Length: 261
Figure 1 (cartoon, helix red, strand yellow):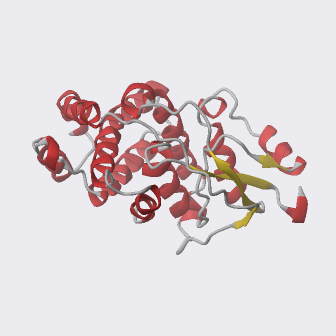
Figure 2: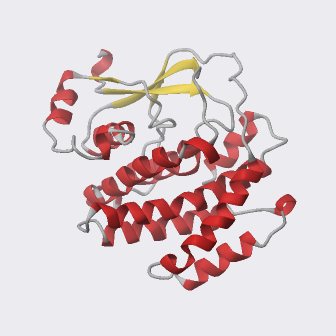
Figure 3: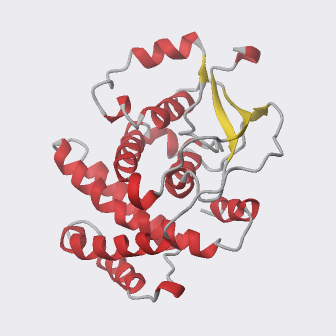
């Protein structure tokens, strides 16, 4: 690794509807909890020093979700929180088989967000000291190539949000503030063309779930799995809302919406 860096995170050009888990929750939470604006903390392609590899291998996490979809966010958050030197590298347009979030991403969401919530507990003393986020150093040359467009079924996402609310309402009453549930019910009653699950409501709900996860950290995995499973339809609702809000925006303008989270 050059210039003393221990961890290199990718910086891809991606379509506004690609990486919805990153854009809606992983990037904003990572930024808030580490104080570093690592834009694609689950980007899939990383470089790391031998020293950091040894630190990774010494940790007893390989029988958990970290060894599955949780691996990227775990490596990124561990490197930052434990004081390793982190940078980003431009890698051009992301070429991959992008997934429709309403059809394919629920298992990934649960494992990634579960790992992230667990990291919030593990590094609580660190993130409580964060007051602002700064950008890491960036290397390489920004590509002018356009990312491949990604299709997104907004109606499917809204339908799954509404069904998820009906299926999970009684369970949510065990840990969500009643006002939060009333707000989500109000969103569910909106017509499709006017559907909007605001950033503020999304942020408050995510933190409600993070607190509930912390309270259940020592519980059996099935208890935590149920909690994470019930967050998925709200993620669908927020993704649909983002898609509706940004449908006429180019990707660079949609990026400004993401940065406001």
